[in-house]
Image 1 (cartoon, one colour):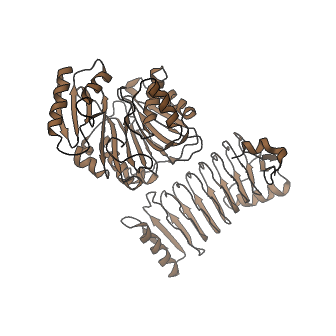
Image 2: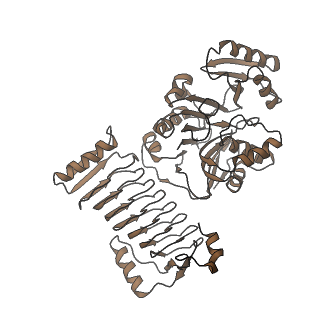
Image 3: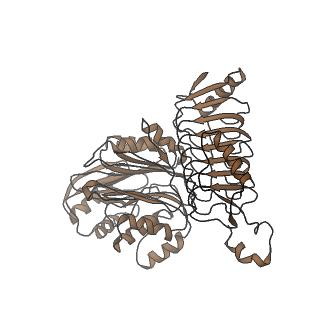
Length: 229
Length: 309
């Protein structure tokens, strides 16, 4: 295991050092003193393990494809944005737009997620152990979001084929979002995903999907379109 | 962009290095707003403190003497001090704040009272937060709470007058800092101007202080005024507001601007990037981002010990 100390280094120097250590064959890297700096551990395409000892700022673990990134603190805006594969686990809370536009892999937020988590997801999985903020899953096209706490307003607004599972209370569904009973197959899949992170399926679980009324324009649904963002 | 920061000491009668803390928070967020920097700090000075901007440039010595003289004609002045482009006056008391302010401002069109308060002092400079230290010795300021701002101008000119924090002219001790845009600014401004309220700048953020002052004059407590603002202000905002006894934030309905909160037994710190908090405070602090329309306010224990969520 190798450590990279962020203290006194520019963001570019930190990321270059991480990449250099990975190129040299290292499989486990610990980042010290991140102090909520932005753009840490980005664009990593190898299946290495990166442990960040503290909170991170914006866009941590963005554009990654393969690594496991463990954040021993909280995360700012755009966590794991555009991730292709791998795993990102945050011990604390996450800021706006966590797991935005991810295409694969799994993001786990042990605390609460702020607004627009999982916005425009195109695949992969987002697990929020705490509460999910405003507009979670907005326009998500594919993939799965599991919320073990409560969900705030505008949940699953204007969504495509993503699926959201909520254990707690839903403050308000977004435009065109509908609630279904999860099938045994759904529960088995959620259970398998959660067990990877020592989490069990909660007793009650609602499944939220698109009502498909916003997928194609129809004059009959004009009122719905006026409301939709 | 714009950086906004806040610090509130929760300890009973807590007086700490608020200037040093606000300066540290601001320094980290200097790159969010390179145009200007400012702070509104709250302490217990020896009288009523008035901060006056004498002008934007040039030799302001004679004007300082003239403004001081005008003040002496109107009330008892305990102390005067010139700091950069500013004059600091300590008064025994004031009967008519607004009348006093307007009287000083007749000295020259560039003269502007930037704050009046029993506890509030506002300092602003162009450029980086380091200039607040050079001109005002910000880090030596002790008190209970403070808010700060680094500005990246997007809608109005860059000068001392358009810099933040904004004091709500005429209302003792009320100040705000804002990140975002108030999109119904012109409509609100017209409405207030029809009622005879003067705007000092073309900066949309100025209307927030005027709005809160108006709401509080109607009898709303500080936290309720903040709550009402989330319904009445349009656009994107994370803003912080403070009075002699209170401190709080409000977030827009769409969560368009960042704000990070941390609270311990001793203090509350706010900043729109967590990096400011982590470079200022050591130790394990939980941080979180408030949700849309969220408002939170804290009150000094000496102000009655009330705390609202």
